[in-house]
Image (cartoon, rainbow, N blue to C red; front, side, top):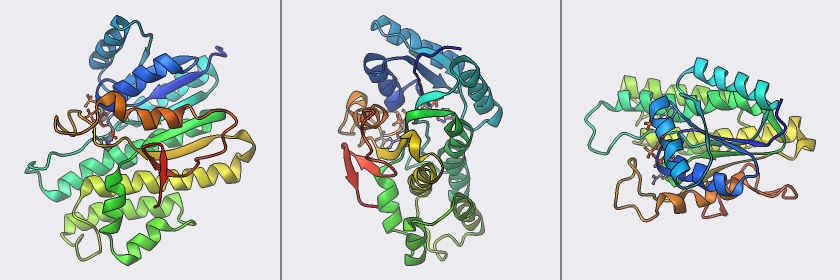
Length: 276
Ligand code: NAP
């Protein structure tokens, strides 16, 4: 078994994830895994970094596929006995002009951004080694979408005692409400992406709380963040940040020094803790 520290980035073949891998290759003292759902696109990205003189390793990971997640888990367990850094970056967004019905957009978006990210966490968080760092890439849109929720929902999403099961129930309810055409009446905002990222931010708060309760002595720090508005296939060419600039906050959180005890359980953008 290797004692080399190991970092994993999801959705690493392009955009912000690729830039996070690039930065970690330069700064993380260990093996950096670029993961991608498509092995061809992933290997191509690894080769591109190699041309820059950087060494990333590849492992397949489709966060929508529980089998794929378990295969990565088993690989990490066997080869490294755990994991030091996990960046949950993979995500999707329908384009503004997409004509797919809202209920379809809700189901598909929540499936990857919330449920896929949660499934990765369920399998990989138990592998986190002491002083491990976990970064869940959310979005400022989670904050604005929270503001668009009913008072009752806002209270639930801001609660310091909400459980993971309760959060999962709420995310499922959103999808069901869109199918019944009652999401508006039920207090949800009109953004599937926004609700999925509310899920990611609240999940991060819950997971940090659980780490405090169950693994306090292990000094693991886990946060949600927004990379900013970044020029990628998702956000388009008009966005203000380059992918490398977008990677800065996630990488800062992934490389928090071993004597840091904060931030933890926070929502961070531009390396600054934001109110939730
Ligand atoms: P992007 O260029 O579209 O890249 C998304 C990445 O996620 C791709 O590598 C994609 O792989 C991967 N992915 C999607 N579904 C996946 C799955 N089921 N399993 C594994 N990988 C999957 O988007 P981006 O702008 O870099 O976004 C990265 C993250 O930042 C996302 O979570 C996004 O919500 C968040 N974010 C972005 C912005 C922004 O302005 N760009 C702002 C706030 C937050 P494929 O190539 O195979 O599709």
